[in-house]
Amino acid sequence: MKKATKVLTLALAMVMLAGVLTACGGGSKSGDTLTFGTNAEFPPFEFVTSSGVIGEYDGIDMAIAKKIADENGMTAAIENMEFDSLLIALQNGQIDAVIAGMTATDERRETVDFSTTYYTATQVMIVKEDSDIAKATDMADKKICVVQGYTGEVCVQEMGYTYEAFKKGTEAVLELVNGKCDVVVIDSATAQKYVGDNEGLKIVEDASAFESEEYAIAVRKGNTELLDKINSSIEKMLSDGTINELAVKYTEETTAE
Ligand code: GLN
Image (cartoon, rainbow, N blue to C red; front, side, top):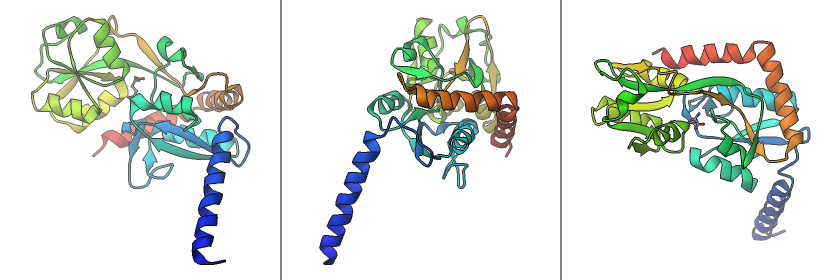
């Protein structure tokens, strides 16, 4: 075969293979790739590092994803994208599941199915150490920063406050550090990480204002085959202490420095 023909044939074969893979997106046979979507901007759950547990991706969620795939004889792959795009990508079949510190909310349950809860968190407020914000209602006349599409944004919206939304947690925290906003509303474990990384910040909790949030893995509606596999892995990792160990490990790792 001439080189050009060979290249063309190879390209064609790849296109066909891609077609087959997409067509089989809902299945999860042994030996398959299990593609998880995430937004690797959410330490200690997911972040980019030089050598992570799945390629360049590391964190509690990434370790959980790898274990789920391993246990089912599959290979875990990660597609990193904006948080807002995750559920759309899932519905399109671009990814098989979403693991992104994602809270299983009623609104999201309308479009996807969620696994068993693997982690419980809550929204907290990050403020400067000398801030007079002591409870959620103190935010009323303050400049509030959130991350777009996170449950933190939904909470602040429901409280009726005006706010500015950023694409990334680090951007919102930088705004606070630079004195351009007074408070960042974000998930508890991630807040701890940011407070550990930046001087002069503290966390303010308000359990009466922020409900607890359950992190779960999302799959396409009705994909019970995959959901069953994910759930049995999660239940195992919860009962044998794996998830606890991962939480401790990554919380220490990402706040040390
Ligand atoms: N738990 C929050 C949510 O579900 C934030 C998740 C995230 O930023 N990765 O919206």
